[in-house]
Image (cartoon, rainbow, N blue to C red; front, side):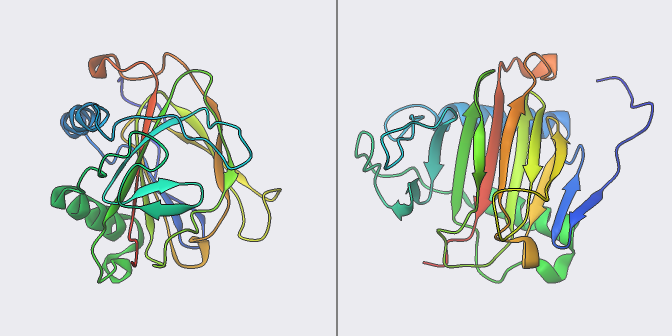
Length: 216
């Protein structure tokens, strides 16, 4: 990508919520994409998530460490092929800890190890409604990494799914971390911009890798 006319800067969106543009360089993006493609293979691969009301999420998902389905965790893909969930790699946990240190400072890095990854794939029509990441027992910061197409990431408040919120443009390689008073803030993805992924990734769509500490 060409150099920015006005380079994007690290921004605190709310207390405890920080956006760090271009945190992953091109080489790390390609390595993470290769890993995501391997994780997406069956068994326990990429699946469509069904909600208790009978609907489906438009973003497809694969889990590592613990399998999430609305609104609990399990050790097997109970809403899919029932295979054991894929293991959470230690290098991904180290990446999460480094992300927290860079975004919020070393004092915010949790003592407990990161042990959950939710990898969501968004095609051009996929969305994610406003929700909270509240099914974990740990209050450790959530780490979000973006690959591929640019999206609008809507970061709201802890009380309601409605305003006030802030819309943030997340591009490939961007980091977003939220913890502390922002840990249970509602957030979502109302829009993906097709065809905006870096050409060298050869990725059509958007991947979001969300890393969490279970506390289980």
